[in-house]
Length: 392
Length: 248
Image (cartoon, rainbow over all chains, first blue to last red; front, side, top):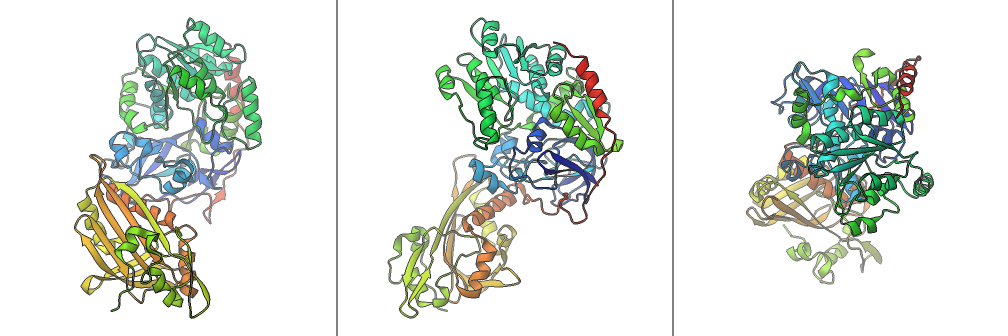
């Protein structure tokens, strides 16, 4: 089959590789119909995530048709259309039973490596480095899905791939980011980063009862989508001082909750951002946290900082004093996708949200390298790339 | 059959009774083949304690006594876990460096560990302490390639948390050829190995299978080859269009 392989920093290539097969009884093989490039794939692309190996198959946002199931998978039928969550969860462990799917104890074959780095291991992930399991991803014609009796959700006829694909990651991720804000009626939510997760966080914040959502970015195209699609008030961090502006917009109080939908590659215009950049370049730090710092400073006393943005390592100059003094609550982590699949699918079915608004590019799998380059370099014009093997 | 000198105290106290004249060190010192060396097995181990022992027969030799303790929480009852472990034939399912464990008569078991390059490491062990649903303790017999003793305890965890499984092992790895095989098989960090064994035990008990990526495709496959990229980019024009329409 054809698959998108990671060959090194800023080097992805479509390769002809062997087809996947059933390895464990709870596996299924899915024929991919639509897959996407995620913002977090850019962290791999840019070489920020350790334990990648040349030849790893990328991709954790995908859906398709069940073509084969292991003998322990009773709930899926061949030919069924499914969306697959990017977190792999066994459904049996302490964490899965408490719906902390992304903390699954049993799905990461390389849990020891993650535990060595982080103390404990999270769940296995598709196409996201060997410390996260080393599972082959879904930017391919076929993919092996472990614990297929737990993760994949069947999609009713009548909904297109493009309407439901983002249930695999970014829609639940944006939704969980908003849910983590514990939104009360009348709340103002500020969202750093108007990429795909930010866009879903904006919409989800309104769905959960926010009165105002303020979106922050520097790409006019993304801000425009936040304004037009998300109905957010928008701020360009090139044009205004974000702290001053947010404080002013909220009458001196600050937003009730702040969402950092940027993560470890944040860029900004202030001294601390340049300092981060220098340190990262010198390998003195791995993560740039300009957006997170701003969120902590801007958030109102007793507010919540919600972090769906991915962080991989150590943070420098983290303003913990401000966080403590204001009594902030922090909520973060990989998305517990399984929890949100069915409720969010229902919202799509009811027509309350159509996630396909995000898609700016539709490519064949063969065009993946071009897709990564474009997604990396054209933050303004490129919001979301989906790839369809059938277009090859 | 003569028993070696490893006792429950060795296992429970680990390195605390090294000075004992009849203890592990004395045993090792009397058997040059056991002195020196690396690592054991069976369940993996670590160089937690390192002591130098002088032997009368061959001048100075080094013996390393390894003691490890580790634990894991498994969301199953102590009885279920005990039953699975007590059937020693099951152990190679999750202890990757074991090839087989056979139960012989009289509580004696025969263990075969995988070596490198076809070499094998074998020993007999006796089950010398057993409390149903609670404890299994074993120790190797006199002629073992690897002198070892260990116990596994199954302890009911707080409500909703299943069972704490606690492993304690002492072992004295072999020197010479056998030692080399064992050392190569186990790598440099036997504690890591046994932790991995316990994770696989947990996966098997909770999820019914062991998570793996062995056998999945990648671009590293021998017959993998690049697919030529479509030369004409269709992307640039679309992007410009979108960018041009923006203004905030």
